[in-house]
Amino acid sequence: MLRPNLSTFAALCLSASLGACATSRLDGPRSRAPSPQAALETVPAFPSGTVTAAPLAPPPGAAASPDAPPPPGAQAGQPASGPTVIAEPVTPPAPPPPVVASGRSSVVGSWDAKDATGASCKVTLSSAPALDLYKASTSGCPNKDLARVSAWDFRDGEVYLYQPGGTVAARLRQGGGSLDGALTKSGASLALVR
Image (cartoon, rainbow, N blue to C red; front, top):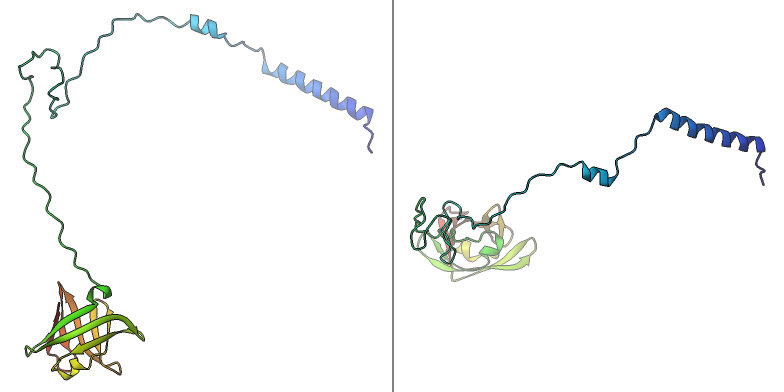
């Protein structure tokens, strides 16, 4: 255990008291803040006037409600002076254009295929996966290339119809409610409609 040294203790007390004296001496004479009551007595009084209340007139361009009192200076039964506002008929906004679904899910389902010769058949695009593509089937197609379609995919806004082995049978692009394109081998036009 350490014993406090008497000379160290005396030195600390002396320095503290000198420090206290030095700060009060360096601050200069202290001024006293005025008391709250003295501050209230020094505020000059302002004369008070009479207070009146009256309803405000409606803002420009707005009609007053029928049960509201007339504005000051107007007599009951007479129109208030000022500009007359005539409401123009409001036309409802035009409905937004119909949303046309696009993308892979919008082409899933049964389609009627029509080729350049006018022949038609059924093409069904399924959402069931087949490796990295989706399953497709056809029925009643006279075109042999279209009749062999077994898979499909949607890439870059186009529908690709595939035959077994990965050969592309047709490429089609969405246009409104149909798919329009061509058979790959012959280049003949092909359209799928609902």
